Length: 230
Ligand SMILES: Nc1nc2c(c(=O)[nH]1)N[C@H]1C(S)=C(S)[C@@H](COP(=O)(O)O)O[C@H]1N2
Ligand SMILES: [Mo]
Image (cartoon, rainbow, N blue to C red):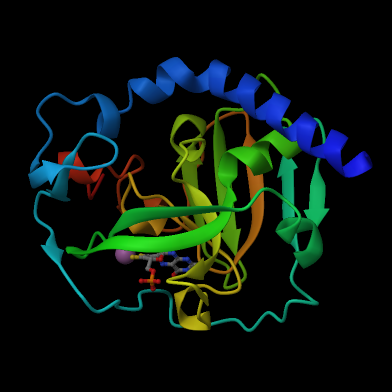
């Protein structure tokens, strides 16, 4: 009974968030651009499959700051706080009790490789947002990794249905070198916007730059605009 009402609450909050950001989301470049740069058939969100300047890879390179933190599931916590009504610290069980989804999406690294049709499982970022209830003033999130990484994402990007906190890829637990136990993915933005080993999501009332954004990479990171550097 209690479980049902918890889920109902998340669904209700998810619908409200969707309504609140629907217009903004529809107008983001990876949905709305009428002359996107790239080639191939139209993909899941309406863009040519391969963004400009990218090459398809079958392998999956590892890209990070060089330190791979080890977080066992019993010690794993995800803090979600900031400009929200209901900040939480989730344990692994709390996280796995949230609605789980499977989604296939593409992964575009700014260093020009793209890995297509990756099969992910995890929790939608919008459901995490539904749980904590961002205040009306929240416009962006900052995501922090256990390796001290950070990256900022606007709410209209973060709430897209393909943005996941992923724990499984190709039906296997996400390997440590790729950000396991849990990482974020942002299929409509360059992949540095998805923090590996995600530790904290902070909702913010205004934009702030993350690790690479402060070091000359684009704040917005749109693959179909070749939007790599600021
Ligand atoms: N915590 C953390 N997340 C991170 C990074 C990092 O250094 N630390 N690198 C980013 C970059 S630049 C890319 S391209 C992707 C790479 O993910 P992969 O190593 O699984 O291919 O993770 C992103 N997320
Ligand atoms: Mo990257």
